[in-house]
Length: 267
Image (cartoon, rainbow, N blue to C red; front, side, top):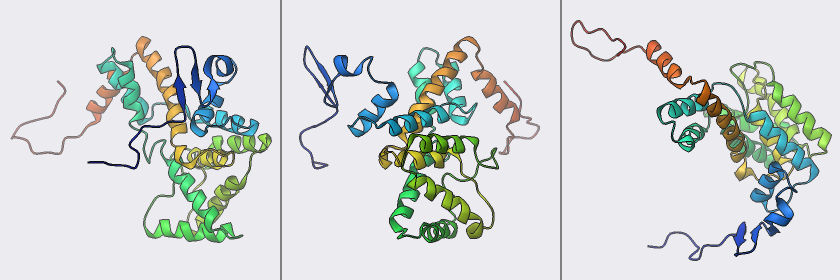
């Protein structure tokens, strides 16, 4: 049974022969290695075109902003996986990346889609479009992606810095304006303020430099991979993976059925 339109695999990303490796139409050894930063190479790989100076500055800033955020669940999963299987660094990294979803690291994509929909519906009045869409989120009891933070009750400090980088680089600030418009209308719609967090700042600045909406989730994934490797390197010499699991064991409360006289305890 045939599934999909293509019957012949095709790619415009890379090709090679015994003498030459081509990536996005460029000779890897002569035009890219030693001549392009990894940030610019990432942009080239994703879009097929080299970044503008603004795109380069903005993408680099977003990768730095999101690479490290302490012992969040994805990092704990990664370190505990490494503790259990220290022979498989790749498995520990994968364990952390598998935790990148709508709550942790994945909100940038859904937030970008919200910004794009407001831009499409704005018709000269982005505030009205924002009120309408945020009202729909409210009615459906859906969280507003990219707004609110358990620690940063005022604006996430990374937000202002990313906006500053984008502005200084000469990026299109259309989506930044939309992001700030949403922040302004939220209190009237839901009855309390929710401030921008970094998951809103990332799509706001990246969409303004031509980064594809569908690839937005890849930015925090790539950035966090670097952070995970840093944590795992520390785990090799200063292991805490089992300590994290022991803490969970100590705090757990068993609520299931048990025979008379049974008292849960550690092994």
